[in-house]
Length: 157
Image (cartoon, rainbow, N blue to C red; front, side):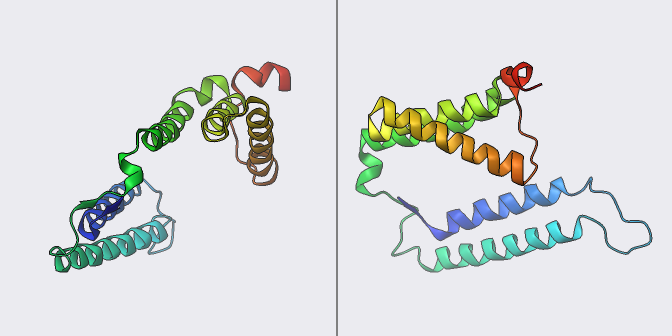
């Protein structure tokens, strides 16, 4: 599946605008002309310029490139189900990870996707457990990102 560059440019400019709006509440640094929002806003400006260039490219190629060009996989129900499971897994994580915790939620998401892709229960469970624990160790142990414990909080503490 391929979108026209103009469509992607519009999305990129929209993302840049949302991200720039998110920097409006960033605190100012006392005694300096610039604050903590400078670097994110520079990135947003770069994204917007890139989006504008994509729009111009898409406009020039509009005769040869349709707005949406679908490949064979985009017409396959099996592939669309896998895509829906991936997007659903992200939404599931966003909605329940605070309550359930990172480890059980990530395990369920990865296990479901692996089961869909591999079709074997045991290997899917082993891979899901290994991936979940590795990601937890990298983010929680090494990078010190506070991941939610959820239902496992009473076991850990």
